[in-house]
Every structure is written in C-alpha cells, then in structure tokens.
Image (spheres, rainbow, N blue to C red):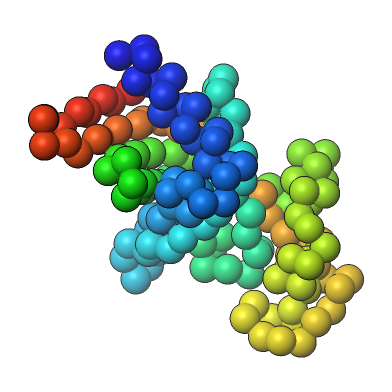
Length: 160
C-alpha cells in the first residue's frame, strides 16, 4: 500500500514536468449556481507534506467565482496508456498576491503572459499592465485520494 501511494505521488510530480503525461491536464470539478462545473487545467505544482496541488488561472474565470463561493474541488486524472485514474478531493485557496504568487508568476513563460493580459477574459485585446493582476495561483489542500488501475488480471484500487 505504501508503495502504491508513493507511486501516485511520484507520478503527480512527474506530470508537472512531463507535458505528454496523461495526468498533466486533469479535469477539475467545482460547484456553481448552475450545478457541477467541469473543466481542464494544467497541473503546475505538487507539494508532499501537506499534500498540495497547484494550478494557474485568470481571476475573471468562472472557476474562481465558484471556488470563492465553495472551496471544495475534485480533480480527475486519467492516463490512457497506463489505464490509471486518480480522483482527488481538495479544498482550494485562490491566491492573488504574496511571495508564493510572485514565485509562481515567475514560472509563467513570457509568451503565456498574453493569456492573462487580455482586456476581458477570452478576447484578443491586450493590456500587459493587467497580466499580473489577473493571475491567480490555485492551491488545493488534498483531503482524499482514490486510485484505480484497470487490468484484465483484476483492477487495483487504493484510497488514502
């Protein structure tokens, strides 16, 4: 069991750095006034103790509104090559400023600043002064994990 838990954590860390890894782009699920909302994010960071997962987003996005109202979020990771699914329950803090946010912003490549610099979310107009102020670091404190590996020889599951 400890080996499988270590495998899950090591795989999450690997997915942060391997753009082709199946777990790099999970679906996150939040709750809104309209009901459940699923969308993809890029896994940007993993810390082990306590277990934290990080993603970047624009402060004007719907997920920020959802998470400010209800900080609970589920992550669903799927690796089709390994036939592995990881579901993660978490409570998310949306960070707009501070040293940890400045450090995260410094990891955003210059070509991606444009994503945060548009005059309104989803438009082509650019205001570079707004780029940094629109950047949000989502930090998710993990509250539960369920791992599933599909196999013809018998599925493997683990909860921690």
